[in-house]
Length: 130
Length: 120
Image (cartoon, rainbow over all chains, first blue to last red; front, side):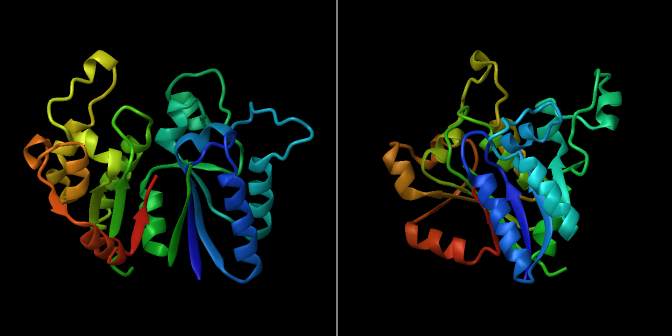
């Protein structure tokens, strides 16, 4: 089965994103496909190179990257949600004339059209919200 | 690509968090991709449709302007539970946009008939 994930929860105030990560690992290990993981809303704040995760805690953003490397995941961050929260790639940094880009490499900024495509291209869309 | 329809559920009151705006943005984007979109205003979600809201005093954007423009995006399947209106002592004329008033059984059918549901 082809899944897409919509992740909406704040990384710091709940475990929905961690549940999404565990679901992804489990689905992939059982031979399912994940078409796209779309990060939207408050969850976007954490996809920043400026975030410091305490040493004895798990950095979920890094874990997404590990999963993406092993299973070729498409990690898409909503561009409107990102820029309003100060999460910029180099292109947005240049466009808005800011001092630095901070989007974690491996994640891509794009529009809600990527969510629409995920809806059309997947057998299931799972939302991990608040 | 198979034609899939999408149901978006608004559950939160106006000006409470960003979920209403985020859900509305999904509606507009998906409609632009020719995905048939229906909107269900459930529970507190119905409150954001009350006409005449003055959001300027809160220094917030008024989503009513966008709700009123939904027809331009070919989004005309809007649903409100009759029981929610009664709960808030509202009538259909209190709402800023035309919605179909449905009962719980019809809502269950609407959800069953939807291929994709997003409920932020």
